[in-house]
Length: 324
Length: 140
Image 1 (cartoon, chains in turn green, yellow):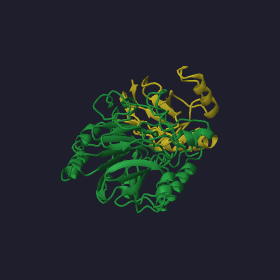
Image 2 (cartoon, chains in turn green, brown):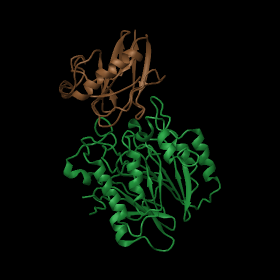
Image 3 (cartoon, chains in turn cyan, green):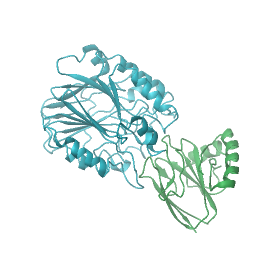
Image 4 (cartoon, each protein chain N blue to C red):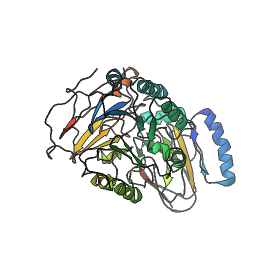
């Protein structure tokens, strides 16, 4: 089910890591992708990924390790040509998560729970995720979740005690930070975190030891995947500057419905697949948006693209896998 | 008052009701996609055909929203003109004035939004989901 080298593609853009000292020693380790959910396992602060199926088979039960699931861009309510059954593929993803044994400690949803804030869609997502064995589910919003009412409903439900949507927590020695970069869009602008959130982030990491592994999650990529299509966070660079002193920071994003990875210093970036539909590769075609593929290929396309980097002592690689 | 309509027969009926309401109290009216006759041939044939099939006619210029772009980023019209935007993408888009002079709901595929421009001026607008999408209506 995997192909660990032939389709690995370097997506270094102008700000890519090629030639900037990234250590590519080692090999492209075969780590697989399940199409609708990725299990991250932290062992000794180093993240690696495996398919849900593999995780279920092998278990993530060694001492001091745990796993969590990232799910993204479920777009509940989407009924376009790119996937006539987005609810069905979402349910498939949920079934995969439920099959993981031992269960993941928690689940992170990196936004666009809903397609255009369809009535009932937040319920569909939260109820389904509650049905997994994960202890908790953490959400951050996508633009589809907040555009219609400025985030009122989303923040009321998932915004946390402060109601801001951004949050942090520690789990077994790893510090997790969820950021919101889809509110307050300005005409001609890009996704941004804003001064308040940046200030919060700065303070949040201030007291942490540099040896503490970080995992940061947000909807729109914090790095410049493709600014022309808005696949970047305007003030993401400032946020990342607060993370640079840490020995290991892993940034998880959604939004672009395809897998990409990049490493800059000790920070590794990973974008996730959608459970609903794929999008074109950056710059391919006239613009972003749901990409229609032959229906029999849909699940396969959800797991197609991959980029692998090997960073210092961390090894992070992603390899093709499909739902099929 | 903002609303939206899907380009179907049932939505067309609904549109008339909403339009009547709009006449009573507001400027923005829900309408349907164009019959393809007033786009000046600016759109590909494929789109024009879809329009002709899927939508009843309506007054005023029509703009398509496709591939994350407004088909006429700058449009100049006389005061009193109703402008209609029709979303042809599978992504949801909006048409929202930067001064909130008008604001559509989220438009799904083939849904349309109209606004009647009664006062001369320059009206800049953008998509609140994809803010790199911008446009301008100049009312003379």
